[in-house]
Length: 73
Image (cartoon, rainbow, N blue to C red):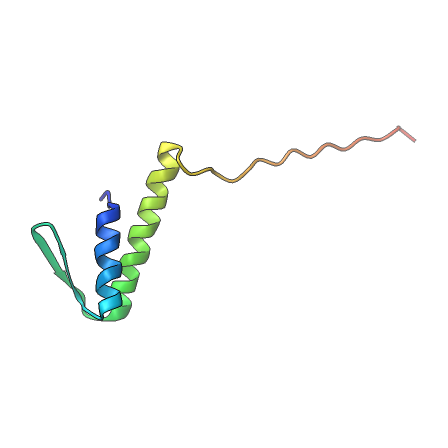
């Protein structure tokens, strides 16, 4: 499922307020624990990062090129 920044903002706002019920548009989700809410936030952040990498908006790990030389002795 593709997540949005609005969903992340709503989840973080609920965590800040100490609420366990989050509404996205016409859907409402109630989490059982704060840990479950935090896990949902982490999952949305990972998904948003993966989307950014797929679009080329977030750089991937830099390549390393190692050159070794010797005079042949």
